[in-house]
Length: 130
Image (cartoon, rainbow, N blue to C red; front, side, top):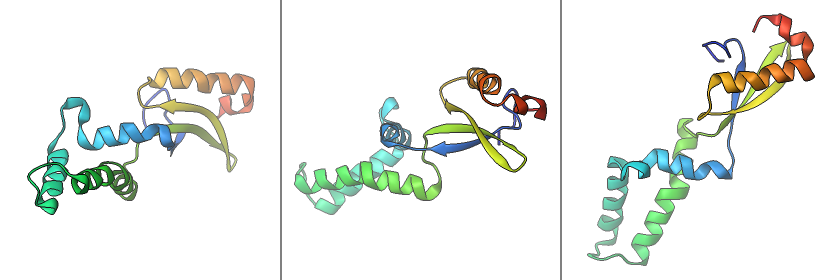
């Protein structure tokens, strides 16, 4: 549930799709900032397992798996997958889906779409005090 105005009282459910894979991998390894300790650890593991002083197929395969499949699996298990939101309201035991939102936009922008949904599709929800 959102805890701050203007979305306070509304609920959100996260959804994930293939277009969010890049962002999750970037968040895990800090590629935007030149990498982080997790990235260093994976690279070191790759070379330690291979016992090679140069990059070979074994290292490439290990890195490809660790930086993609393993990352998404780990973030899923930890509940850290990042995607976007479906914003909804519960009224009389029913969920009413009002808008989609993403992390990069302001709550006010999302709330503008919620207000439009109230006006166009769910005028009875406006009086519920969200």
